[in-house]
Amino acid sequence: MTSVVTAAAGVSVTVRGDAVEETESILDRLASDGVPAALAARSPQLWGPDAVAEAGRRLGWLDLPETSRALVEPLTRLAEEYRAEGLDRFVLAGMGGSSLAAEVITRTAGVELTVLDGTDPLQVARVIADRPERTVVVVASKSGGTLETDGHRRVFEAAFAEAGITCDALRRRFLVITDPGSPLEHSARRAGYHVVLSDPDVGGRFSALSAFGLVPAALAGADIGALLDEAAALAPTLRQPYDNPALALGAALGVAAAAGRDKLLIADNGSGLTGFGAWAEQLLAESTGKDGKGVLPVLVEGVGAPGFAPSPDVRGLVLGDFESAALTVKGPLGAQFLLWEYATAIAGRVLGINPFDQPNVQESKDNTAALLDAFATEGEAALDDGAPYLVDGAVEVHTGGTLGGHSLEGGLTEALDALLESVPARGYLAVMAYLDRTGDDAEAAGLRALLTLRAERLGLAPAPVTFGWGPRFLHSTGQYHKGGPQNGVFLQITGAAPLDVPVPGLPYTFGTLQFAQAIGDLRALRSRGRPVVRLHLRDRAEGLAQLLDALKN
Image (cartoon, rainbow, N blue to C red):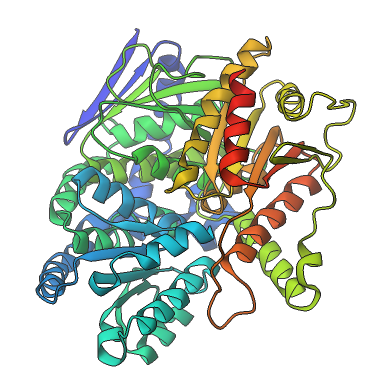
């Protein structure tokens, strides 16, 4: 048998080649263990006794196709009210699960939503300066204590005040999404902001069909009722042991990772779901990357992109049609959100991990907080990463002693080659860019393909290369980097900014916060003995051009 298609409610999951036998074997075991019925009944025992407490309060996403319908009419009405007042630009300030789904929904629907999920001062300055007279800010944080989001709220409050928007007009400019009883709920109600409470039994990365995904999307003009209809059509199939595409996808992902194919190459080939891979990346990496296990999503630019090729530790998945892929997934967006959430929970069961916690995300947050506390008393010395190993033009190379045995006399190019050569068998290289992802630095995303091609020219064994924008990836693949298999090699990129933006009411700027996040994560990776090189662009435009050229030559 060369392929098996499992389809329902407009969704299809196709498994091909050598993936068929192993997937069918695990599907039979999941069915005989009664897993679909147990998950539909929200049983927290499915992931072992240590996960019961967390899982017991994290399964509300199963009910969202129905429970979220109460949001549709009020949000439609609220969007109309805003537009009648001349407010038609919506900014979403949120991180990870609080922003990625809304970004996918609005990009797929072709409606405008500005997503501010970073701390780069160039990005922050550009977003706050754009059409303040027409702007509403959606502040989204499940915990209510997200450091980045708090900074975004503060800077917008100051910007509105500077523009003469105060009192009732200012209160009208903020809508807050958070869990009941969070610090953000209390402060937002004191300020008189509009508050929408989300279901506390839904974890952040499983919240696509909750208020976190739907509120910003509805305000921007997306049809959230249709999304819920698509998900509701799939929901009845989730309790079935057979003809259950979400079960098939979860089984295929989990059994492949358990057998050592723990890198999942994801390419889009005409799915029509713009940016969906970034949402799936966070869901999978943060949910499964722990206990030395996990599924590492590797987003590639398309089915013909560098690196989209099979290897012993890699499984390829295509969103859309592609007959050469081991896995293909098709279906409407609302149904796909539910499909992938369910599949991730199943993959966690197969791998024997708790898919609902994220212990190492908190580690990075704690590192950042400690560095900011030290900065308040010690100043810049608290963030010192030492002298660069070498300076090549506009680029400083900081190795932290992790590239022993290389003289690096060839400068930047040799440092990059040495890093590629240090990737172990069955390992991966992660690029982490603390730059302006939506501005002039956006071309840094091309580093993934260029590094892949460079490794090929050096004759190195194929190894997946991932790319993430900092600090965005800290709420996504950052969990896998520290909690998953310890075979990663890391390239961190920071850059001097020509301007900075103070965080009102706090003793640091966004530039300082961004650098503290970078250095905090750098130290976490080095403490694990992983090879890490930091490239600091002394001049962003010149340094980035130099870096790209070094890989092209």
